Length: 348
Length: 224
Image 1 (cartoon, rainbow over the protein chains, first blue to last red):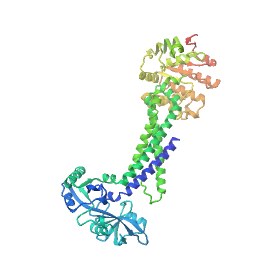
Image 2: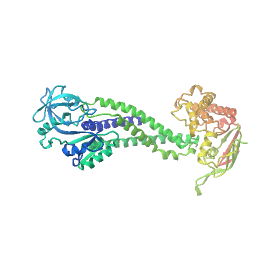
Image 3: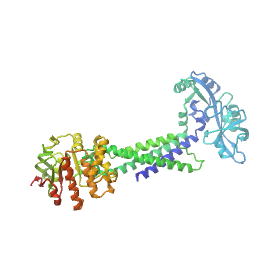
Image 4: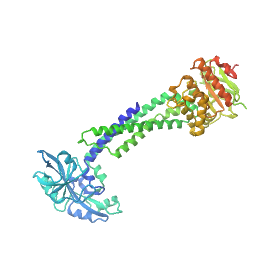
């Protein structure tokens, strides 16, 4: 009975975790595409890329900081693009960038774009196609595809000159003069502590907030709100798991009180009984984890592909450890009752 | 030296006007290899005597010795070890671990208190089950055994740690007369072969001939 309940709770935890990670990852692909580089944004931007402005002077200051290996400008503008063979438009974010990464190739030639693979799943977009981007339908030739760079909507990646032209039309208020960028990504020199470097950059400019990737992602309001909501639900699910296990073992201990009295009479210590109970809790929860994760993966596979669900190894590890720990704690709620069992009750 | 020696044991329950004297200055000796039957009406004190003898209850006065060692003054941790190593119990309601096989139930008492289940322990469990006529049932769960078979497994469990003393509470109460007699005769055989002292509490007068000695207890006093 408790095994079945635990299986369902594990399924719920995996699916909820999958949605949380799916939503987070689908809104941060462009940031993650820069790898583990530091991000430099203007101090008053509250880590929001569209609000950030770094002048050419600040860019020079950052580049000159000791411990900076390389810097690359980056900027984004939201707009729309045509889709081949369709009258409909798709929302996209166009990124101008300067540095290649493990995800992004060297910026394509002017008038070309590297395209988020997600766009190809919405329409039959192929390499060599031309997209009409922005209010004036600026033509951009598809130079290639990149994976996992979605920022809520698909992204297009262009060199900074092309981006400036597009931004001037798509969002005149957000257009940047030559040399200015919204943010910089910084590769620390070898053996440079990123945290120290970030502090030195901010001290040198007096006008920037330099953060690592995790801090940048955590600083996005939508990500933080979703995370807190889902973490709340996940925490409640763990509490329910705790209560289910605690109730089960409380009933089990009640039922087995005569047996435990016998085992104590035979020379068993309370610690022997607690160890046995803990082993049972771990065994039951481990079995429930295996079945629950398998069922959850099958359920996730059946969901429509446009739903942002991603089951990650890290999330599964957290759920596994959390479930095992919760089961042990739940089982130990019966500790006081076990300690109070009198071996003399075994007779008479 | 007697295997079990109770010297002037007094045990009371409650206090004030509610005080009940369960054992009143009881003295008793049981020798190695002796099977003693303790009989008496309900509430006479025979179960209390068994629990005091097995160090499950501490007497208010008097001394309990098992194999010459005073056990009535042992500390709680020492008492648990003493019970595991020196005393075997067979309980009225048997209470085998339901999810362990007959053999595993025997081995479980070896593990209690941090003991080790080695090859010798396994051999002993197998030998005991064979002697008790349960060799072919060693891999059965308690739910797959008859009442008599479960009682025999409980006897094997009591003998597993090679105790000096076996205390048995109403072993035939849940068995028909034929099965009850078989169990008592088996118990006698084991007690005699191993030279173990045994005290058996029972109401069943049909098995008195199996015992070496019958002791009657009434109102907390040995009366015969």
